[in-house]
Image 1 (cartoon, helix red, strand yellow):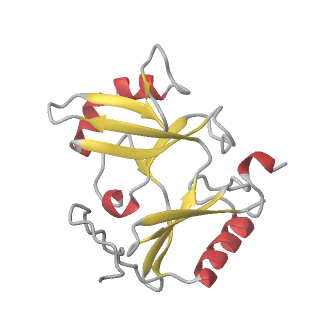
Image 2 (image 1 turned 180 degrees about the vertical axis):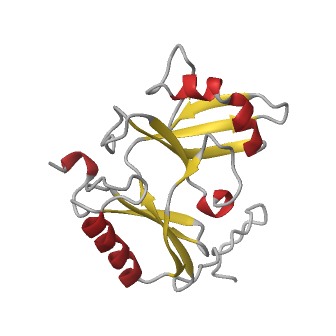
Length: 185
């Protein structure tokens, strides 16, 4: 008699592959604004979204949907798909001392070159093998020198670390990184 239970109908689920930690990473500045997305349809339609809902000029999020509607022709250059970024600047979170609002795309690898003139990209602060020292050095540089996204602004939020092998992102804050978001003073 076999001690191992069998169920011929149960699908086999393999253990997932484990990505290597000491591989490439990209560290970008974490901009303190509001998460935003532009969706370009296969038919050329352009739609605006926040982190968790569709928005429109009538039901907006800091004017992002209105901005998307005004820049739809340029945003079509992003091509079909979802394009995530940060809507930031005047009146949004830290404001960065700006007199305008900006949209910065998150995928710095894809958008570091040619992109629509109306879009920025989050600044890449480090690209190389992942080490905690690299992360710590970049955070220390931001603390000492201020924002790269908005030169002259001395209170940057932190960094986003993208581990290329794992295809996963992590954030490290310049201040209160050891405190949960709702608990920071």
